[in-house]
Image (cartoon, rainbow, N blue to C red; front, side):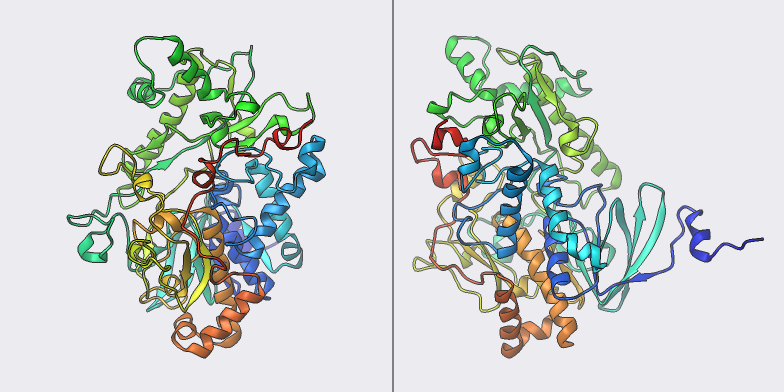
Length: 560
C-alpha cells in the first residue's frame, strides 16, 4: 500500500494550509508596483514569490484595463529606466508581431492605441505579455515564482515583524502559507494592512490633521474616498447588432447618462453632432477628443488596411461609481458596491447601443481583451487605497506653487520621482471638478523613502498606492509610472536591507546608509530628482491647448 506524503494528502483536502514555503521577498499583489518590486529584488539576486488574486499580473494597466496615465515628459525623464523599458517593450511587441503601416513603424513614439492620456496606449494582453518577457529570465532561473488566483486571508505577526502570509487559491479552495524576511503589500487596496493590524489611514483628512490647503475644513471623513470604476473593453462593428441584454439596474443609471452626454429632450442637429462625436471622433484632419479615443488601446488606423475590423477602446467616462467604497465597510456592502459598479458600466454600454442618436448597436464588448467573458475588467480600477501611517507623510504644501514659488521642498531621502498633476475625482467648490481647480498649482514631485516605512512594522512595506500620502496627495502618486517607481524602490530596499543586514528604518536614519541605498537606486536607473523644474501636468492637460496635437494616429503625422 502506497502512503501519501503530507503535501500530497493536503492537496486533496480543500481549505487546509499547506506546509510553509519560504523566499527572500514575498510580494502580495501582482500590480504594476508588485511586478516592479519583483524585478528589482530579483535583479539584486533575491528569491521572490509574487502572488496575485486575479488571473493576470499588471494591475491597473492590465487586470483593471486602464491605459497608462502619464505626465508629458515621460519619454525623456521623470521615470525609472525599467519603466521606460516596459513602455519600449510594448512598442517593440507590436513592431514584432503586428502588421503596422509604414508610417506607424517609422514612428519613434508609436502609440498603438492613439489614446489621449498617454503616448503609449496598448491592449492589456500586450502589457501582460511584455511584463512576462521582462520577468522571463528570473522565472527560468527560479528566482521569481508567480502564484495567480491567490488571495491573502491572514497575516501572522510576531510583535512588529511579519512572519507569514496565508493565501487562498480561489480556483480550488486550497491554502498556502508563505514566509519571508521581507513582505511587500502591492495589492490594489492595501489588503495586508488590516490583516496585519498595521496602522493605516483611509479617506479624507482634515485641515487640522494635515494643514493642507485642499484638505477638509471640517472633521476627517475616513469613508470619503475617490470613486472607483469598473472598465469594459469594446469595439464597434457598424451594420452588426451586438446589443447586450438590458442590465438589471439600467433604469437606475439611465438618467445619469443623459446628463453626462449633454442629451436633451429635443434632438436637434447640434445635439446629434455631439452624439456622433461621443463615439465617433472627427476626421483625422480635425482631431477632436471623444469618449472613443479617450482611453482607446488599439487604433486600427495604425495597422495595415483591412487587418483589423475596428478600434478597441476602454469605456471610462460616465461610469465612475460614487455609490460608496469597497474597503472599511462590511463584506456585504462591499459586494453590493462592486456589483453596482458593474451594472453602471453595462448600463452605459446598453445606453450607447440603444438610446444615443444615432444608436450604436454595433458596439461589442470584448471579453478576450480583458480575460473575461462579459468584457468587463477582471478587477475594478482603484483610485484610492488604504495608506500606511508612515515615518513621513507627503503633504500638499510640500509642492504647492503658491507656497514655494522657487520649487518644491526637496526630500533628502528621495527614492524616485513623479510628475502628474493632482487628479482628484471629486466635485470642486464651484461647478468644476477638484482636478481642474488644482490644475497648475503643484510642482512635480519626489517620492520620499520615509513614506515607504511604517511607523511600527519593521519588515512589511508598501509597494503600490498604499504609501504615506494623504487623500489629496494620493491624487498625484496613484498613477502608473509612480506606482511602478514605488514598487521598484520597495523591492530594492528589501534586497538592500538583506544584503547589508539593516532595517529600512536604519537605512533612512543614517546618512551613510541612505546614500549607499540611493547609489544602488541610481545604478538601477531610478531618478531621484527632476533635472528640470516643471509644473505638474497630465499628458493630455499639457497638450490640450496645442492646436492639431498628435496623439498617435501615425498617418496624421507621417502621411500615407
